[in-house]
Length: 180
Image (cartoon, rainbow, N blue to C red; front, side, top):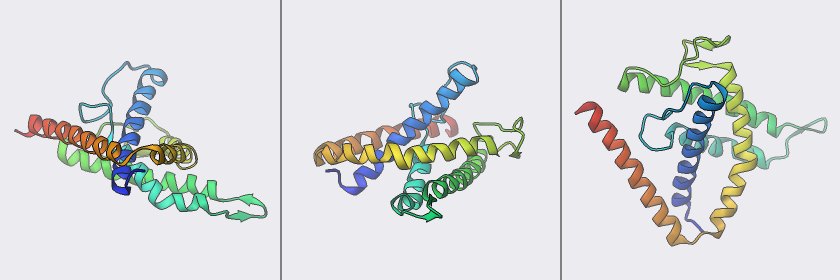
């Protein structure tokens, strides 16, 4: 079984990769723009998705376990959906300002969306993130936890250190290349 901190990092990494795949899928299959690396790092991961997923799991996973009902209708999934929309939209807005501060811009533009704020956030992606949060909390995370229960401590530790070193190296190369 993975120790908690190794598992948290591995979960962060898995969702960072899933986020990158989601971005590339949107670009290639939905918008038909052609392939490009959708992150600000070289690797096939978008850390903002990893951080966002950890926030969702920390704040919203307890809701999944509660059996909140109103006149027999389960409320927990609705609350997880709404909470995901709020948290991910806040993360996306904050990330746009951080990226703009350090790089001069951000990696998306929602100016053409009907309901949007300053091209940084929009209702359409927030709804998609809400649906993604349901998938994470009710589908993917339970599978990751079952997989982690089967992994040995040594494997988890080595995988976490290797992936952390890879991510750190990627970040350093980007920072050195951009600012030095």
